[in-house]
Image (cartoon, rainbow, N blue to C red):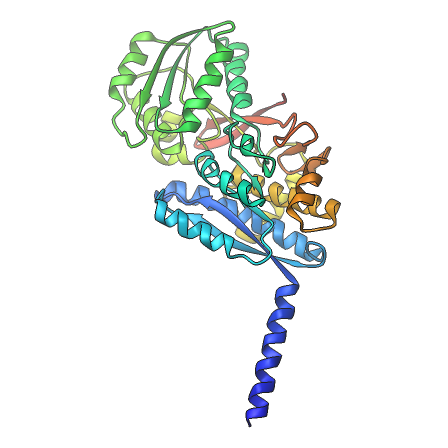
Length: 376
């Protein structure tokens, strides 16, 4: 009887080792908002990565190993929680790459740690230009804030024929502060900034700064915040009778509608990374697979970017023929003309995708509709 038990134990150990040898784990790191509306948006990251994982595994995996995703979500900016999460990620056997994070704040915290350990990091949607400046192992799949700030400033000047603007900046957000700066730099080339007002991230009453907007009566108001705060600002502006176009960056999304109203959001514009109606064959195929797996409804751009980040990693691993972080990093730097869901990728000029497109979306009848595509 004991021989049978010993034999069974040995068999199980060998089976576990064999299974482990045939898999590779990739952590997906993202912030999980505590609000119901934004929580749904941020959870899109893992969906996009999952679709990519399933597609790669259907082709035999990475170098013959099936991918397993490690769901690494941060539910609060708590140092102890983040420390525990980092320990969990470092505990991954044969760790060579991480997909994430999905916010510039989180990426700026984690990137130095991965850089120090020589672990490849591909952030789907961290737009702050400082993220990839951390080091040579840090990449991104999205455009950067200088680009989208310029895009929205040129859109205001050229298409909306705006000559004046007011900026409302969430001073507690590096993303918002940076995007405001880049908008101002471009807009002031041929327009005038009437005022730059600020607010805190936890604010909910914006009457004071909106009174200033109403008195100044600018042609446009630029609000580079996130869905919750920007939605409340737009709702309160509408209730105060402020009737000018509001513009935003990729922090708006569907979350803005959850904190505003259909009427208040109507006619306002924001830059984003992708839209399901983009004219792109890979995009159409992605939308079809997404709906087949998760049903109809919202597909956030972060989902498409997470999908692209995984596909870029697959391409780099194939080119390297290895899971060595150094070899995969070097291969990432050689990727060019790679067709993704959200556009064409070229990393030969650096760790930010060169000439990555942006889309401008408009709120209409409670939906985010495609307006145009802008290239650098």
